[in-house]
Length: 87
Image (cartoon, rainbow, N blue to C red; front, top):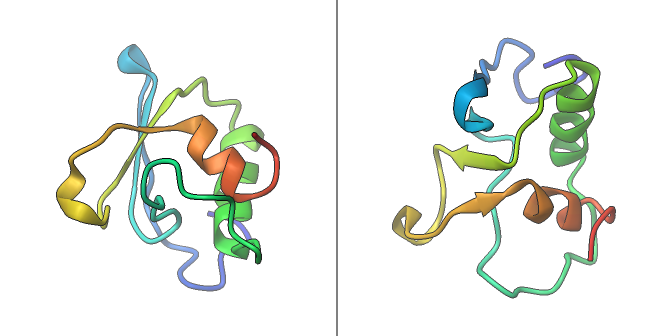
């Protein structure tokens, strides 16, 4: 991920048939229906920017470090909300 200060060698897997991105550390989704954060996480902005730059057609994100045991589906809309680009 270009511009990622945490680790530029982070690998993001893209599964085009199911429009899914698998990533670690870049986006840890908040609880369902949580309000948008007061401060935007720069790493999340880098992730969204890289997905746009690569022109990836994705709807689902599988965060490897998902809180709460990974019991819900994380959508692209969750990421966009967290970076101030969604509802």
